[in-house]
Amino acid sequence: MKITLSTLNKMKRDGQKIAMLTCYDATFAAIEAAAGVDILLIGDSLGNVVQGHASTLPVTLEDMIYHTAAVARGAGPALVLADMPFGSSQVSPEKTFENAARLMAAGAEMVKIEGGEVMIETVRFLASRGIPVCAHIGLQPQSVNVYGGYKIQGKSEDEAETLRRDALALQEAGAAMVLMELVPAAVAQTVTEALSIPTIGIGAGAGTDGQVLVLHDMLGLCPGKKRFLRNFMTGSSCIQTAIETYVNAVKSGEFPAAEHCF
Ligand code: KIV
Image 1 (tube, rainbow, N blue to C red):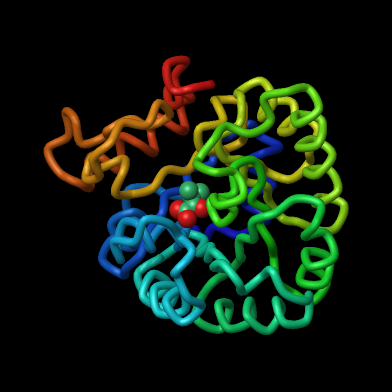
Image 2 (image 1 turned 120 degrees about the vertical axis):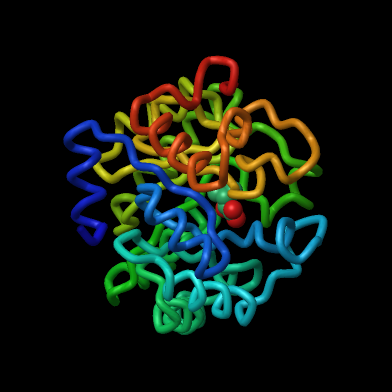
């Protein structure tokens, strides 16, 4: 059955975990959908894992439109979520709508925008004009140059409270979902419990309503060890099985385990 926003809201209400995975082409879209992935995220992480850049910053709107269209062709019942790349949402709400509309025309069913309070006006503008928005808070990779590296966010009480307030304000503005990256597990759980919309975590512990990983990372294709990561190819005979194992581990609450959390 087709996964829609209503499905995701019901999953949150019923306590069923949501499995999200990044995806960049039609072949993997079909594999991931058949493995039971609920949401295919065309992440701007494609800048790193597909294009070979050191960050997501060089990814263009045209790149995202190209990959979104490819994923949408293979997505089957999975919901298609596209990242708004650097520079495409840090503009006026009107211009952001124009950019997001191009992703929706290419096959996206929701767009993801990095940013907390600063994005509230934009989220309200898009959500009230037919574009569901997933707000990405915590570590925002497009701001890597501001942080001076990929660092855990929300560690101090003040930071945690800002994160909670941002999430509530984004929900009030009409955000359909909140994604938290590299946030202490306890903080992500508090935010999740405060919201009626679903939350997705990466490096944010087991208390969120769902999980996401970068495809190439969970298949063990990228060198470098990240604490929040598990290589699902270990013990799997093929990619399809590895992705099914990921989905089952998310749905059962087995992943992330304590060793993957901050
Ligand atoms: O671009 C991406 O893959 C992402 C995930 C890390 C959540 O935004």
